[in-house]
Every structure is written in C-alpha cells, then in structure tokens.
Image 1 (cartoon, helix red, strand yellow):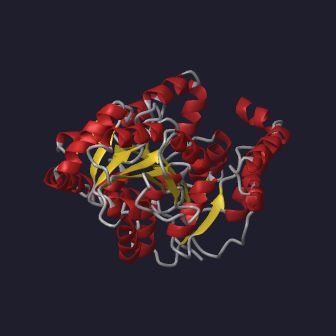
Image 2 (tube, rainbow, N blue to C red):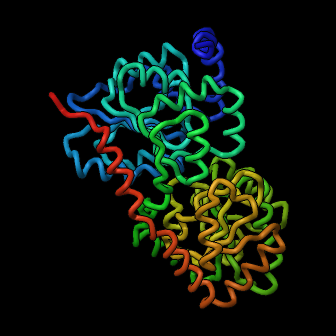
Length: 420
C-alpha cells in the first residue's frame, strides 16, 4: 500500500509535529510515548476489547456501550484510546476506574505495530469516522474483529474518499460490521465498499445525562443569587463576542442579567475575557476562582468537565459551534438536563437531533447577536415558555434507549470466546 510506504518514511516529521503540539498544549508531554505505540502500562490477562474514539464527543457517546459491556462481561478488560488532551481529561473523570485509557498511536507502521503487539486486542470498536489506514488495516490483518460504531460520514468526507476508491474499499472492508447513524450515512458507506451495514441510529441519543452533582448545582445556583441568566455552551471564536453583544442588547430590559459562557476550549479563557472586557463588560473567570459580584456581566466558565452542572443551573442554553461554520455540538446534552435550547444555523454535525428538536418545538435557530437577544428575551420574560421547550427537549433527548440495545446485540455477534 502506497500510504504505508509513505508513512514509514515520515517518522521524523511526525516527531517534530507532535513536539510542536506539545508546546501548544495539544499533547501531553508526560504521555507522548503512547503516541508512538509505547504502552503506559501492562496488558492484563484475559479478554481485552479496544474502543477508539477520536475526541470528546465520540468518547462521551461510547460510555453507555462501555457500561453495557461491563454488565454483560464483568471480567472483561476495556482499553479506551482517544487522540486529544481534552478527551483524556474528560475520560479521566468519567471512565470507570477499571477501564484503561491510552492515547491512540500516530498512524505510522512502527507505532501501530508496537501498540498492537503489546495490547493484542480480542475485539476492536471504532467510533464514527476516525479512519487511520495503517491502524485499521494492521488491526484487521492481525485477525482482530473490528466494528464501526455510530458511523458518521459527511457528504464532504464522502466525496473526498471517492477520490481514493481503492484505499476507501480497503478501509471499509476491514470492518466486519458498520453501524450507521442514519440511512444517508449507511448508503455512503456501502458505496465506498462497506459490507454488513446496519442503520442503528445515533448513540448520542443513548448517552446518560452529563454529571450534575446536586451539591455542585446548589452551590452554583447560590452564587447566581436568583439572577436571570442564560448559558452559551461550547462556544468557538466569534460566538463569545455574539454572546457579549446579546447581553448588551438585553441589559436595559434585564439590568440584573448574568450571561454564562463555557468555551469549547477553556485555554482560550484569557483571550475571551480580554475581548469581552473591550466590549465594556465585566467578566469573572471561573478558572481563577473569581467570584460573581453584582457588577458581573459575564461569568466565564473556562473549566473542563462542568457542563452538566452549568446546564442544570440554567434554564436556557445556546449551543455553540453553530453561529460559525463549525457544525454545532451535541444539543441532546442540555436537552437531557432540562434546558430550552437555542442554536445557530450551522448545525450540520447534528442534523437529525436538531430536526427533531425543532419539530418538537424544543429549540429555535438564530443567525446573529440581534436574533439571539430577541429569542432570549422571550424565554427570560416567559418562564412557562422556557419550561415547555425544556420539557419537549427532554422527551427528544431520552427517547432512543433502544439504540443501545441494537448496538449491544450486534457487538455480541462478533464477541470472542474467552479460552483463557
């Protein structure tokens, strides 16, 4: 395979690239060896299922699968790999204690071989669309059954893979089963050469609510002191400014308003605080332990792992990544925690749940700061409308428990027997 030959020669370049990511905080310096296939711990005896999820969204979505596997196979060892520092931090908080986490090796033949030789998985479950050719092909060639879970393939990615039909077919046929999020994804996978394709639905529907410990929620609500408030969650560059402008539009009408912003990348906290300060807004940063005072306009929740508490402490959430062409973030997370939902027009990463939320009257789309402020005004002035939307959102967010059953049934068909 030409790709394998090319990547075999790119080891030095990969090292330089990863070290540049270390300097930018994108890699964990202490665990960088894992990215080259050097294991961080020994492999336990017995059956081992390897689950790979690229980043935060995918890794959170697979948690119910992990829970089901541990219920049905209590002696099983589960190895979880992810590729980002943020996902590793979230998994450290949310994975069961006996699940092993490692960073996925870079897609170099040597790193892949070291990883597989050490861990020797008995079954591999891959999430969504993380297609690394060397890792996938080497895993399949070693005889490990592979299943693609919650398969996602946008039209843009599909067209890109169509330009590489031979490589696409090699990758797709490595999976013994592909469980697609939707019929559209299933069709695209089949065209690329996948076999045994099943439309199982979106595992994000089957996820448990994000953690929201009652004591933490009460503490935060006490700090809010009953002020009218809303949350802009998982925001990207450009959206914090829109949230700040919406706050300024609303302030004459709601002089005690508190806007909470939880950026998708908390390391941007200082830059966001500076930008909002230049708009004339008073900002308190959660990461620095700054208190909410009567003069605080913006509470900047630039921390990790607290979205559940934030959702539960507010009645209205704007879902970020959607006012800018990022594609949006999972609207079902606030839906499960009693939030009325607003979002921008760019929601192509979550077309199906957004369509269902809109159809149920659980969410509303806005296109700029002015429309955001207008939509917020309705919900802040009429709690009964916010409550009705939140109830509708929760029904959508909790309606698909059968998806996990179908996924678990398909996994069981390929589950190896323990001969140890």
